[in-house]
Structure formats: C-alpha cells, structure tokens
Image (cartoon, rainbow, N blue to C red; front, side):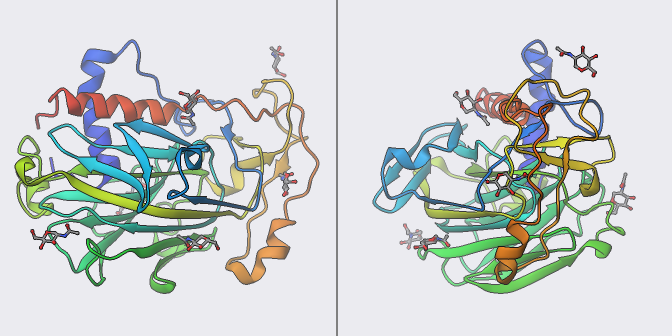
Length: 340
Ligand SMILES: *[C@@H]1O[C@H](CO)[C@@H](O)[C@H](O)[C@H]1NC(C)=O
Ligand SMILES: *[C@@H]1O[C@H](CO)[C@@H](O)[C@H](O)[C@H]1NC(C)=O
Ligand SMILES: *[C@@H]1O[C@H](CO)[C@@H](O)[C@H](O)[C@H]1NC(C)=O
Ligand SMILES: *[C@@H]1O[C@H](CO)[C@@H](O)[C@H](O)[C@H]1NC(C)=O
Ligand SMILES: *[C@@H]1O[C@H](CO)[C@@H](O)[C@H](O)[C@H]1NC(C)=O
Ligand SMILES: *[C@@H]1O[C@H](CO)[C@@H](O)[C@H](O)[C@H]1NC(C)=O
C-alpha cells in the first residue's frame, strides 16, 4: 500500500496494531457513533515558544518518543528504526490559524510534519521530505477519504532543512490557505473539495512530529515517495520546532458533534463546565459561529459565538481517543509490525 500522509501511515499501523491490541484500542469517530465532546481552546490566541524550557509543553502531549526543549526549539530526533517522536495539542480548535516555525530534518526519507486532524479524520498537512531540500508538500483529507491522490501540492522553499521557515494554515468554513513565511502558496475553496464533501470542517488538534517514510520495512511505494531508503547510520535526523502560534476562530471549552454528518454546521461549541452528559445536548447548546476569515476580522469573529453556555456540555469529556490510536500505531511501528 502506498502511504503519502501521516494519517494513512498511522491508519496502517493501526490496522496492524488492532490484531494484537484489540482490547486496549478504542476509537470514537463521531460520524459513526456518539462521542464525548472535544476539549476546546477557550481563548482566541495561544502561542508556544519551544525554546523556553519544559514549561512550553504545558498544553502539548508527547504521544510518541521523547521531545525536549532546546535553544533551537523542541527537538524531534530519529536515531533508530521505530523512532517517531510526536506531540499534539491537548485541545482542539474549530477553524483558525496555525503558524509553525520549524527546521525540517535532514537525511533521506525522513518526513517532518505539521498535521491538523479531527476525530472524523478531516486533515490538513504540511509535510517536508528530507530527501528534497528545496520543497515541502501540502495536503488535505476529508473524513479520511483516501480514494484519490490528487490533493497534494509541492511548494518550493529554500533549504528547509538548514533554515527555519514559518508554515501556516489559515482555515475557515469557506477556504483553507497554506502560507509559507506569510505568503499564501495554496488556497482550497470549500466547493473545490468535491462540493465540500471532502472539505476539512470539524474541530482539529495540532500534531507535530517526524517519521521515517524511507524505513526499509515500508512498502516500495512509500519508500519511493520518501525519496529512498533511510540509512539510520547517517542519523540522528532532527527537526527543530521554534514556535507554534495558534488562533482559534471559535474559542470554547468544548465542541460537540450533534449528528453524524461531520458537517461544520452540526458542531456546537460550549463553555459549560458541569456534568458530563452529552446525550441530551440540543437546544441549550451554542451554535458555533464561523469566523469570516483572516486576522483582519479578529475582533468581530472572536465575539461572534454567543456566550450562553450549556450545562449539558463538558470541558473535560475528551477521551483523546485519536491520540491513543496514534500512540498505538506508533507502538505497532516500533515493534516492527508494519509489514505491508
Ligand atoms: C495528555 O496526557 C495526559 C497525561 O498523560 C492525559 O491525561 C491526557 O488525557 C492527555 N491529553 C490528550 C489530549 O491526549
Ligand atoms: C509567534 O508569536 C511570537 C510573538 O509575536 C513571535 O515572536 C513568533 O515568531 C511567532 N511564531 C510563529 C511561528 O509565527
Ligand atoms: C472521496 O473522494 C473522491 C474524490 O477524491 C470522491 O469522488 C468520492 O465521492 C469521495 N467519497 C466520499 C465517500 O465522499
Ligand atoms: C544535511 O546533510 C547535508 C549532506 O549530508 C549536509 O551537507 C548538511 O550540512 C546537513 N545539514 C544539517 C543542518 O545538518
Ligand atoms: C443523560 O441524559 C439523558 C437524556 O436526557 C438521560 O436519559 C440520562 O439519564 C442522563 N444521564 C445522566 C447520568 O444524567
Ligand atoms: C467561551 O469563552 C471564551 C472566553 O471568554 C469566549 O471568547 C468564547 O466566545 C466563549 N465561547 C462560547 C461558545 O461561548
């Protein structure tokens, strides 16, 4: 099987992991069943400076491997087969902007990634392939739909493995912009993603990490995409993430899918703090308003979501199912179960 994204790679690891870890594995895809609400970021802006020491990880979970703060930022290293250090935000955002300043890893076949991903597998990516020191890829998925491979683009960037650049995603209900050092390099309109069907539109977490697309155990197609086999004796291969600035266009403590459509219109945002009873959430929840777009509209869009909180909603309900799935996938990978 050909793997050209973090999502698919994790999914494959998962498929393998399930064989051995069925009891401990659980997922909650809100388009398939009723799930706990997602923990939201209830402020407009959240910045992380990863050069500032271990406290900079306060809202980030290390879901695989070891990641530490250094003077160059958060350090993600691959030294041997199975290493795939990854962090993810503890919260979700519902439309917003994410700026990540990073220096990608060097070597052959090492993929440095910034991924935004939702519980129903909407995904927006930046992926740098270490084999090519002049480019980076953009990609997206709607509801985990991987039936075609025409969503990616390649963007020219100068020495991404020696130089820090800022890679951004500005995401609204009507369009997604990918920005390189502040310049828009790609725009995806809602209608252009199969009339919105494939358009990423549900609350997302931010995941950052590196993995070896060129691992000799990967499929031929994956190794080819990664530009060749990774030779671990050339390592360690290291990505440094200087800072991550996140704007949440619909700040809230929780996001709830109110039906199984996975449409953004079905997502309700809430600042409620009491009991965890999600099944009865209807009229008293707050409809998430959709921010109009860029930073120019900051003030208006941040106040757009009205403030009546629903007591049915909870801020602590997220069971972080996907992170667990992800960690499980990593384990599968680490034990060499990934044989495709
Ligand atoms: C982050 O890690 C903590 C401690 O392991 C865990 O309790 C929490 O559920 C995790 N959160 C997410 C969103 O993964
Ligand atoms: C985040 O914001 C800080 C403070 O404004 C700035 O110094 C830093 O460069 C920003 N980082 C990114 C990735 O935009
Ligand atoms: C998946 O995406 C393809 C186009 O890439 C589209 O033709 C197909 O309808 C989509 N499937 C679903 C279930 O949305
Ligand atoms: C990346 O690898 C190339 C070739 O081995 C080397 O010339 C370059 O100095 C390396 N860059 C970094 C940042 O280590
Ligand atoms: C949660 O809400 C449902 C539907 O309103 C109700 O039937 C159920 O008893 C509630 N559960 C708890 C634990 O309050
Ligand atoms: C939740 O509270 C934050 C901070 O006060 C506010 O910006 C946001 O609009 C509120 N969201 C909702 C859905 O009420």
